[in-house]
Structure formats: C-alpha cells, structure tokens
Image 1 (spheres, rainbow, N blue to C red):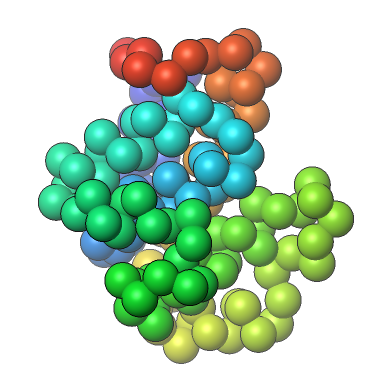
Image 2: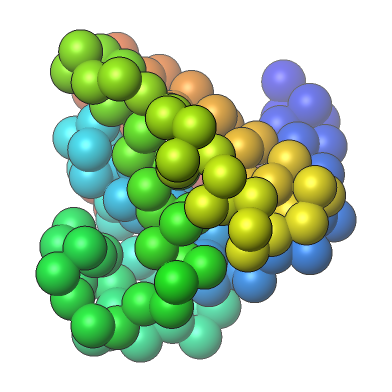
Length: 138
C-alpha cells in the first residue's frame, strides 16, 4: 500500500504546485473533516515547506484573512467545494471551477485535485481508526 501512496505523492509533486499551497490545502480539508492527525501533519509539513505561522493559523478563515493570493483563494475554494459534499453543499460550482482554472495550468489543477482527494481519503481513514494527532506514518 505504501508504494501506491508514494506514487500518488510523486504525481502530486510532479504537478508543479508550490508545496506551501499543497500544505494549506491539506490543512484546510483536514480542518473541515475534523481529522486531528492530518491537521497536525499538515502544519508540520507546511512549516517544513517554509509556510508561515500567520498563514497556517488563519487558513480556517481564508475568506476574511488578508494573507492569501487570488490563486490560493481559488484553490482553497476548490478544496472546500470538493470536501463539503457531506454537508449538503453544492460542491464545486462552475464559478469555483472556472476561477481555479484561471489561475492554474491543467497539470497544476490535476495535482491540486489529487491532493484534495488524497487528503479526504486519509481524513476518512484516520477518523475511522481514531488516529491521534502527533503520530508519524511509515
């Protein structure tokens, strides 16, 4: 299983998206899903990638916080739209999709979507097995 996951991570990295943005996406999706293990891991990963405490601490309020670019806001909206399906939200609207595509290449959109999907996958696994924050994985 770890080999397949490593291949997915390599595919995401090959998409050319700034690792700091990927960490923010991982963090926001994990916050929405209430996955403490992934929230913990994405903060650590974001710091390792050079992300600031200010941006990490404010990503939950990205719409109101002044610390994000238009491109980052488009990616965060895409992440929330794809994640909040369980809330009965409308998902990724045409407006969200068009805004994301205005800021990113097809390859970057693919990497962003894969990051969002993989994070949702891990969040659900971790919530199922009640993985605590602070653990490290293989």
